[in-house]
Length: 376
Image 1 (cartoon, rainbow, N blue to C red):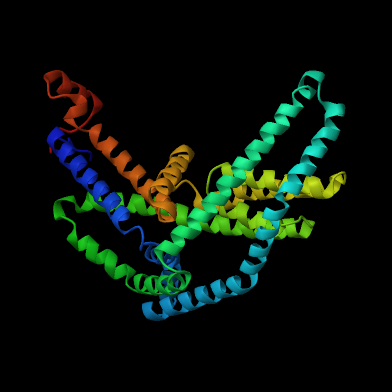
Image 2: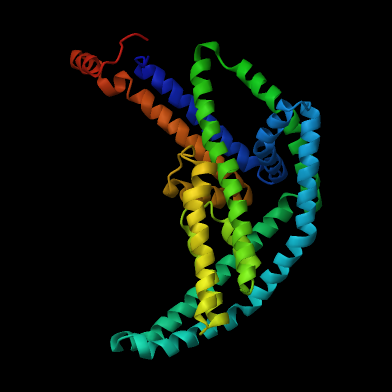
């Protein structure tokens, strides 16, 4: 049964959560230079915790389940590092070198098509359009190059690659091993008068974060593999790179799939034109991927549990990335999910409080009409 919430109580709760938010932001700001391997380890442990629980249910101890999971994870990661990563790096280097030639060939294709399709008033503006397109491409490449340089330099400032590869599995091992004990210990610290409310909030936060990190993370991996293999089978240049990149950024609503589609179709037009069949097959890979994502993967892996509006998600990614760099990008989604749950909780408490209904007799009448109880 919903209870009346006094204005003073609501103010205390809001003050507490604001203090928690300030402390969290201050912690990220002060220790952002060393947090990457720890946050990565926590994310790995959180992602793999359901697997450990299933292994426990079939008879393994928590220690053995943790060892089996992390050994398997490290083997898969090492295999990817030795086989897939070098291919992607080579394709990325070749792609960067080929971009000016691709842009020039694309402009030539547009110039050939303009006499057949475009009206005179657009053809008269094509010179300015080409100049603007070249300028946009140059700015875009500079931004992408600067972004990769920032990530690389920040990564080197945080920890070197060797320590990252060593610390992350160690952190993931101990957190995965002690996950249930840590949750139980934190639960013991909650004030008993508020334990039900805090558990409810924690459950909703966990559902939102798990829906995104586990569900959306699995979806991104599946889509990356699908696009990479599909585009490679089509014979598209840099198909594996474009496919994996598209899958990895698919967690950004609309942006990920649109960027991947533009890259793939642009390369396909330059590579295959005027062979429409292969351009069509490239489009078919993306359209079937979008169908699988929207009708099969998204409902089964993510569902409705995330509760993150696309605009709020993109704002969180940009804001945390600007404030805390690469660490901020890792923290942005869980923090956005938690903030969304807390804001919805605060709004529901406000709608039960006398700040909303008022303390006057008229306010009591409005509360009685709404069917809200008067007891604290």
